[in-house]
Image (cartoon, rainbow, N blue to C red; front, top):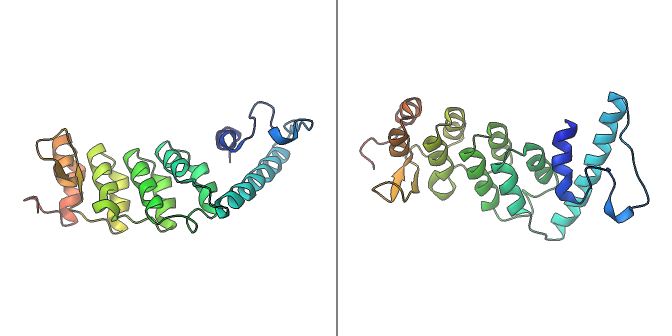
Amino acid sequence: MSQKCLISCVRPLGMDASTHHHPKNMREHTALPATSLAMDLYLHRLEASALQEIAAAVRAGIDFSPALEAAAGNGRHTVVALLLDAGLATHTRPHVLSTALIAASAANHLHTVHLLLTHKADPTHDNSCALAMAAECGHCAVVDVLLHAGANANACRIHTSLPTPHSSALVLAVVRGHADIVRRLLGAGANPNGG
């Protein structure tokens, strides 16, 4: 894990990225180690500490679902992994992972999509909205992964900027000019007649 990635992960957890100490204990200051091996050990220890704190908060019922969705949609794969490793997947409502999947799919964060599916995010949630979002945005690899995971090729989402309020993934891909995705959806059984 890179230092930049971890610092962006740690900042929301109450750590000060500029001085690398916990605000609860302002007297202790831990300088960053100089060697690469020492840095890896330091970051691993810091990550383990954050994981324990998050796991305790999740078990206590603190709602991390907005954080998970924001992290997934903004490409913060490390934060998503940290929240899932802390037990968020088992201590939250079932749709939370699927909502994060929609955000990651729309933003083309393929690794996060894979991670969420591994933790049982439902690709068919909300009428396979994750697939419709990925199709509309032109994210071929995400479309492939979602179709393989069981998303409905006739996925539909509410879309107010098109003449019909409910637009299928196929219609969205056609309107946006994503020919590769149109071929993928048709190959997966999407109905060209809109049904």
